[in-house]
Image 1 (cartoon, one colour):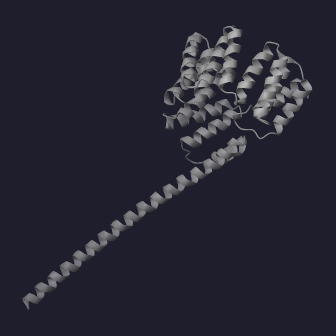
Image 2 (image 1 turned 135 degrees about the horizontal axis):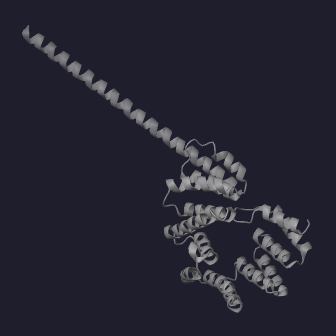
Image 3 (image 1 turned 90 degrees about the horizontal axis):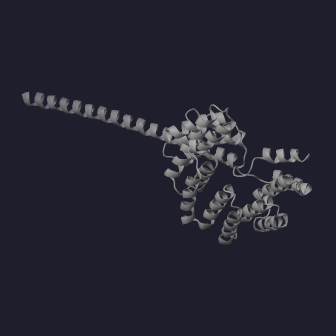
Length: 314
């Protein structure tokens, strides 16, 4: 009898232990399931935001900036990529204060992003151009710092190098500019891309009023990259300013052969005609074609083409 009681007692203990283990197992399983569900929700949220970013970026590339913002602004907690794209949209819409605000937030979340630093530098640069004389120097210095940071983070970023070179060439020394800095940067570029290096040296020579040297550098760039329409455009614009219209027109014609219906070729040729106050009917036709062309954020905004049309009474 005592043995039976002992067996029953042991059986109850075993059942209790099994129930405890089962309860613990269920608790662990539910906790794991909750964690997995949370992970899935997080992944789904990230995927959804990524899909929205892709959609917004497509609108941006088509220069439909309002529609791009309509996709992005409702996001409750946008990540660095979304904040940067919002800032770029506002920049393209010439709302530079808002652009600065969102790009600063993007840079804070992604301090190692070269592209973000570049766009923030551009926004500061526009703020400098549109601000009063008291605040402009501060924005200009911030622009330089961001351009330098972008180049330091990604030494192969051609756009960042170009913007930093322009800053060094244009800004006075007390704001961190200087031809010596521009020349050093041009030498770095020339070591990796000789054609682009010649273009930079041409700008530097032009600033120093060494026009023969500038022309030679532009011709060297063209010889090294004869399939790049931009090389023809650079030399064409330079010659037009020197009053050599026939040579300039021939170079524009070559650029159009290489890149027919390229919006950049249309705009630059029209702008060159208008600056020289010649071929204005042709300039009008070129700008009308430009306004009908599919543009990208890299092309001059339509507002600039419309301003040129107003200038010639179109």
